[in-house]
Image (cartoon, rainbow, N blue to C red; front, side, top):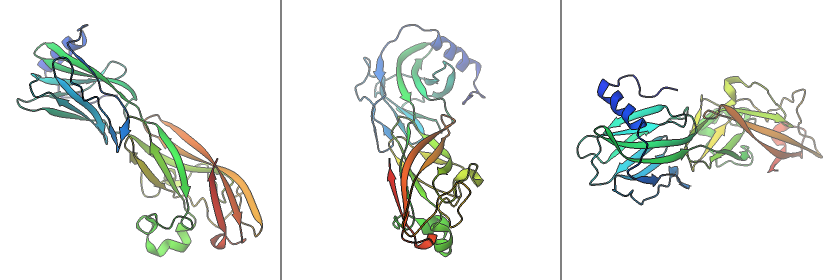
Length: 280
């Protein structure tokens, strides 16, 4: 994957090559850590010369804060495979630069290198790796506090909202990710293997920064009145089954899944049915 590599001048290329060939380090700083409110918590201890003060992921950006007395002309960000992700020139008096990581990067350990002239003056590494977890499935009849009207529209409350679902996904990792698909399989009334628009309502993707939770709203009517060939519906007594939720991760190009137990009871009409969902 190529990033910020289109407009390097000859001086930049030479300096980058020189940096990557240097074996020794002037100072080190561990920039990885726990997450809180979407930010990778940095180690606030400066390196030996006070050059790289903080390195932290916030939202979809990697921020680099320099010490007040540092003399740095350029910051290079190196990908886990050793290739250059991008470079930032540091103007006189500037103490902070940032790199837009987005959600299509390669997860792993990144190197942040500070350069002055032809020499590397400091280096640190930071782990940028998302970890998505499906934590809950909510229905309109059970979770009226969710913004159903804002998502689906007020006029669609009975016809659409009662048939759709809201899936809460948490990112416990150290890098941003994006959910790119939403799928329900198993004992729901309307399981669809390949839902329209990847199963996400009115969105190609939903970005989930580190340490934060986002709600994904479905577009495939998984709890609709129609019961598919392999689906399970409501009855007066009780139907009990299991279903899986699958969410596509953009950073890892794969799907994560979670299984839930579901109970249908009280009516054979879907709009009057009591639906209880438990995480296994």
